[in-house]
Length: 451
Image 1 (tube, rainbow, N blue to C red):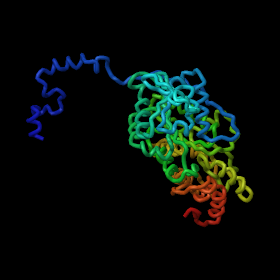
Image 2: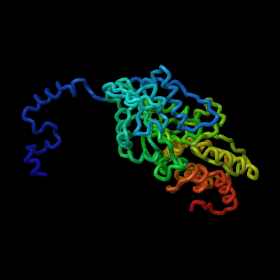
Image 3: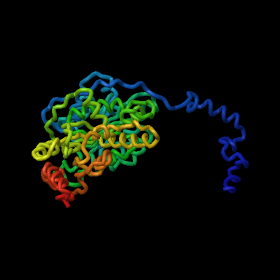
Image 4: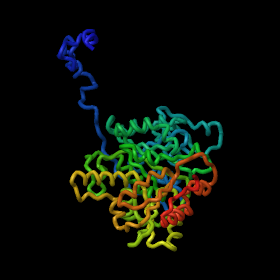
């Protein structure tokens, strides 16, 4: 190091002086002050937030969350709202299959120079309108998931770099989130603001085999800092989450925790939606303030348990029909059955962990949303957790109030078949939930049919 210092001509004791080797430091400093890079002060800027327009409610009796996602964006595309003007969608080769077709047909594709629709020019029938222009609001990326997250991260910093608000929305097959994890991580590290929909997800995409089935992505959503992760089952939940998400992407407040949830929501962040192609009969939700709050906080009671509840089914995402069916069947010989709908295990767990840290620091009144939900359950109550994803996503919930847990989920892949076949194979169907309630009631260990 001494040789390097001598070679560079850095005087002893001035190793940390920025201009130690400059012969005319005052002149050089004046030159730097005149350059455009520094002339206008700090480069970090901001842009006014775009007002949300409220949830876009859909009234389909049976619908998948992936299809609902496309319909909500289509409704926004039809509107003249500033929110719609600021959305920029992007996708790596799965624009049509992830539900972005209506948005793209209405808003067009972006290119610096206008380009006509090749399909139309060659008289090739196509339901898609592939018109490119500087006014377009979709980026077509080809098969390049890493580029997707790089683009989401760049566009998600536009407010701080250029003072112009862009709300980037990306879609990708959920298992291929892993292809762009490095760029996703650094986008969140830089505090980029975007919404990414991983869809379709899980083994519920049964006929396509293991290569298109995701297992660990719920855990990625939970563990990635700067990313609020959600997995709705019903379209009303998705409507609330997307409305909340567009607002959350623009927040620039402090990092203090909300004393109700113990989540630092004021600081905002990026949003991850794990969606499914499975059509689900829609629950009759109230759409009131309490429902909306429960959805964004992490969970709400789809079926309120009674005072002597013996079993509570805790589910997330596309397995909702199995949870509802099992609750009806278990209710024949078990008392006060409850069904807890978890919308983001991410936020439910984060709030619980933060409240525990607050109590350790002397704030004895700190109570998390998960604690308030479970505090009335008797000690003997069994929690059966189930989702189309890794069981560790929800198994922690037994630690909230000290309840026994039977954790059902997916920890293997490679199977192909119908949705019923795979849900049965991995023990995440109604029969598996009923069997778990029976086995655990008599103290027998739960055994997976898949194993």
